[in-house]
Image 1 (spheres, helix red, strand yellow):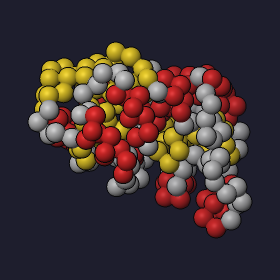
Image 2 (spheres, one colour):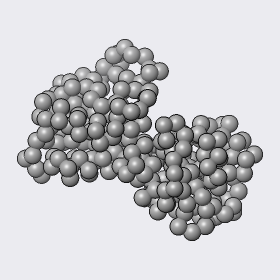
Image 3 (cartoon, one colour):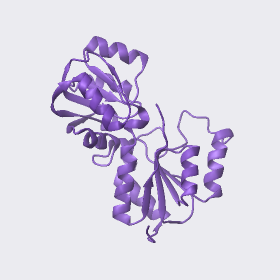
Image 4 (cartoon, helix red, strand yellow):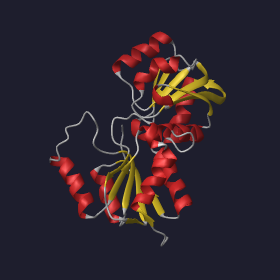
Length: 253
């Protein structure tokens, strides 16, 4: 517990600078999405600004909510009705700010989802690929079979992944991009990887994996995107002295 407070605008400036948010072309606004009270002492962090996470923030008397998946996506209906009204009404009623960072949190070289996956899985980063360099590629500590790698990922992320391809194929080089990055399969193939890991897989990706020979590991959108916002919250607490708590709202996808 801490009595340290940070101004809302100071928090916005710290997050925007740390994540270099201005350099990204994204599908949603990054940064402060809903304005709450002026001073922030307690922050709740999570993957998605869902009703359940909002209720968790209210229960913890949070002043701000910090997430990877926020609101106002380009492809969405922008009208504030139904579940959108309910979510926003709860935030506004409790004067809680919503901060959201999408691609900036995927791409950060230390705190991002992909950097943190490398730390958690023990992979050595050698380079970047795909749109705005959000994908990572590198090598394993030692060659292993695709099936043994899948088991390691499942244990590390606490979710059984789906492996497409030869389970006995030796894997040394890997490429990865968290969340719904299955469309980067061909970019990953160009890195020379033996296997590509992402959160989701599409019907056509199965055929690409079978025909190209590069394995595909679908490890879960939510499961692969927990660790960036968790690390960001820890860095925020260490740097600014305010209280940050990560709340994991279970999601099987």
